[in-house]
Length: 146
Ligand SMILES: Nc1ncnc2c1ncn2[C@@H]1O[C@H](COP(=O)(O)OP(=O)(O)O)[C@@H](O)[C@H]1O
Ligand SMILES: [Mg+2]
Image 1 (tube, protein in one colour):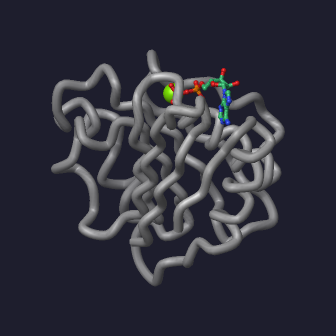
Image 2: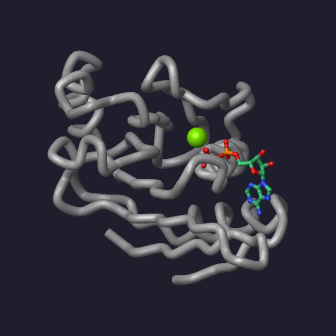
C-alpha cells in the first residue's frame, strides 16, 4: 500500500489504517521496520499508532535509550516496543537488551526505526514501511506486508 501524507494528520490516518490491517501472528512478535531519513516522520507515526492503541504515556524518540516498552490494555497486543537503531553499528547491542525474548512473544508489537542497521537481528517476516520526502514537500509511505 502506498500513501501520501501532506500533513501530520494524514500520518495519523495512515497509522490507524495500518494498525487496523495488522495481522496477529500465531507465534513470535509482530515486527515493523520504519525506514527513511531523519525527519521523515517515523517517530511521529509510532506516536499516533501508540495513541490509537490506548497508550497514555508520552511516546518520545528512543534514540538514546535504544528501546522503550509501553503496556497496552484492551488489545491482543500487550506490549508496544519502540526502538531506534540509528546509533547502533550492528545487532550486538540489541541482544544485551533482551531482544530474543522480545521477539519470542506474539503479544509484542515492535516498531524499529533504522532496521537496516540491525538487519541480521530481524525475523524473516516483518512489515516494511519506507517514508521518503517528495519534491512537493510531502511524505510518501510505502508499506509492504510481512
Ligand atoms: N506529513 C507529516 N507526517 C509526519 N511528520 C510531519 C509531517 N509534516 C511535518 N512533519 C514533522 O516532521 C517531523 C518528523 O519528525 P520525526 O517523527 O521525529 O521523524 P523521524 O523519526 O523520521 O526522524 C515532526 O516534527 C513532524 O511534526
Ligand atoms: Mg525518529
